[in-house]
Image: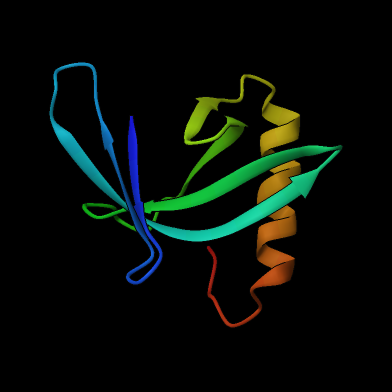
Length: 85
């Protein structure tokens, strides 16, 4: 379940143990007619999370590593102001 606030660009998911986990929404990437959200966990060391959009407020992990890498490359191209290792 997700709760999105456009004002502060944060989304909160509830994990399997019922704990609320907050993410900063960084971008929505369209790739091969699919949407992918790029999120930064609030407790992150800078590592982003990419989830496939499957419906209104519904997201899932993408299993295809090549797709994930391509989406991340598009994200990097869209955000030259960010530094990546």
